Amino acid sequence: MAGLSDLYQEILLEHNSKPHNFKTLEEVSHTSDGFNPLCGDQISLFLKVVDGVIDDVGFQGTGCAISRASASMMTQSIKGQTLEKAEEIFDAFHYMITEPGGELDLDTLGDLETLSGVNEYPTRIKCAILAWHTMKAALSDDSTAISTE
Amino acid sequence: MTTGDRIAASAFDVNKVRGDFPILNQTVNGHPLVYLDNGATSQKPQSVIDAIVEYYITTNSNVHRGVHTLSQQATDGYEGARTKIRKFINAGDDKEIIFTRNTTEGINLVAHSYGRKNIGAGDDIIVSNMEHHSNIVPWQMLCEETGANLLVVPIDDAGELVMEEYKKMLSPRTKLVSITHVSNALGTILPAKEIVKLAHAQGAPVLLDGAQAVPHMPVDVQELDCDFYVFSGHKLFGPTGIGILYGKTEYLEAMPPFLGGGEMIKSVTFEKTIYNDLPYKFEGGTPDIAGAIGLGAAIDYVTNLGFDQITAHEDELLRYGTEVLSAISGVKIIGTAAHKAGILSFVMEKAHPHDIGTILDEQGIAIRTGHHCAQPVMQRFQIPATARASMAFYNTKEDIDALIKGIDRVLEVFS
Image 1 (cartoon, each protein chain N blue to C red):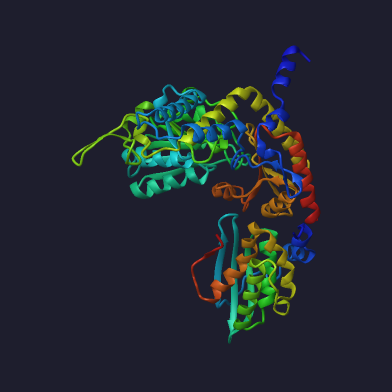
Image 2 (cartoon, rainbow over the protein chains, first blue to last red):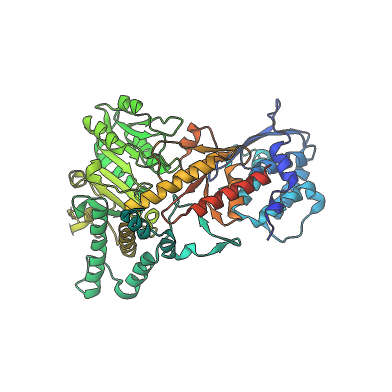
């Protein structure tokens, strides 16, 4: 089993203390709120999509280190990507988090692989996945607030 | 040391007590289990486990039904448990003790039965800002249905109820006060007797949520003079699935039944059904017989230890825990009331409670993290969540030391 140091890697802790794209956007084409009622994690995600490309992305909210770092890394990974590519990254991430021992698509994941340790902590998977489901809900124009419980 | 001290010291031997709880003797993630999540549920002594097993091996049968021997023995066991519970909270009569599933069901029973009959549009129901969701939502549902108003007594920065505000809220419109005896998120012990007295002066009955009180202190419902008192068996070292609603006879008699069915009737025809007497009127359907017997055994266990020793031991743990936890830079205790029971809720500057929980678990330490089903408390203190260490009489100073060491590890990771 992965130990704590595999879960709380340096890069994750950096994203937690200095999250990227932790902002609201002036122009927003897609937005959604995510909420984990069990622990109170909350995220608001803002996307600006121009011609099928994610031009800008920002998030706000409160949560644990894992949910915050995951949100920060997600915004980094999808910024500048096409919607199709964002979907592909979502799938690779989702597979990594929910299928322990599966073969990872490292090309697609890049730095996101840092979060792979989470899949050995079942109670924390929902923390890592919250921002991602929120992104999917925003892009599918599902206006209902999503929940990971 | 006087002779008296020696007797007290030898009577409460925490290591001997721990030996009665088989679950405590194990390692979790390679470390001895440090169980500090008693506010969520407590562990069960061997005597409770044995009572349940013994019931199923020798007695299992339905209660109040058959003429056969086992049914009579099951009934004796079930009703014997009711008597033990009556004595435990010093109620006046066995029929004032209603078996429920848990605290939540007890509150919902009162909301449905007493509330729907007696509370209407424009009436006030008073709760506090430190209630568990189970003492908020049933009243919100009732208010929505009837047009009554839900008033919330504020709490101060220490987590004490603001009594002056409570006094101002009480009026002839007050039809019920439903308030916690001990806060599950903060540990505050509320001045229950005073709360009841003030409500009665306005003619309003009071329900006390005793889920977090009964494991820690003696409760005397006649002394408190409360009209309803609810608690769960599983936080009192008994099994899950069994809880208690105490109600004064005058209220219970006048209330309509909650669940219709078997057991709660005297006679049924399609023209007219006559309801059963107390307490059976509120116990429709086959009850959790083994659960009631298990709870009776738990009460025997606690009574045998004695609250003098339990509270003395727990107060010392709480004092010690508060001292060492407050000494850590970057840790803040949430809930610093003058009178507290068994709970150390805290937040850390650099680590979210969830991360604290995971890092502690890695060292075999079980605490609760989150909003503790008390989101309004979190909103009051403007925090998303807390980490909560909650104690029972089988906890030790070594458990607190392990917690502190665990927090040092959290500080290391989030340095």
